[in-house]
Image (tube, helix red, strand yellow):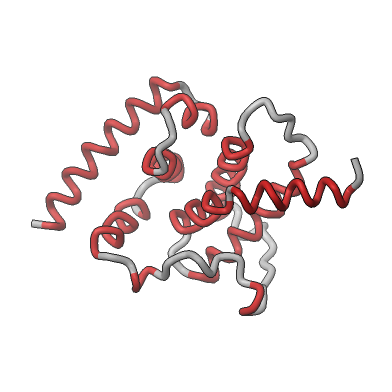
Length: 167
């Protein structure tokens, strides 16, 4: 397959699933510049790995797996990552709602998520996005039972947290 054909397929797939990119970046980064850096790193890793995508899982599952792995390691290795800056016209994440324009409930949810460890962030993101436990387990490389247990704990924490903040 020609490189131009491969690029077209990649671009079409990413365009069809770009909401995954927005969600992961918004959950792991609160400021615009960090979201841009993370988005660029995810896109780089997606392209780098695209030749190895074999279709055994859905593209969205594969994309989530890579995006979450990059996001989790993004801040762990901040000293080793290279920052690239886009001009304002080239911003990847213009569609992401700025935190100051979000509803109070959404703002509280993002505050809650920001306090979680990286794996819990990934779990809650995938759960809120409507993924089945089996797919979450496949994306994160943990058992379905582990997914169910952790999500149950996160739900309990959310009930306690939101009950306290809203009262």
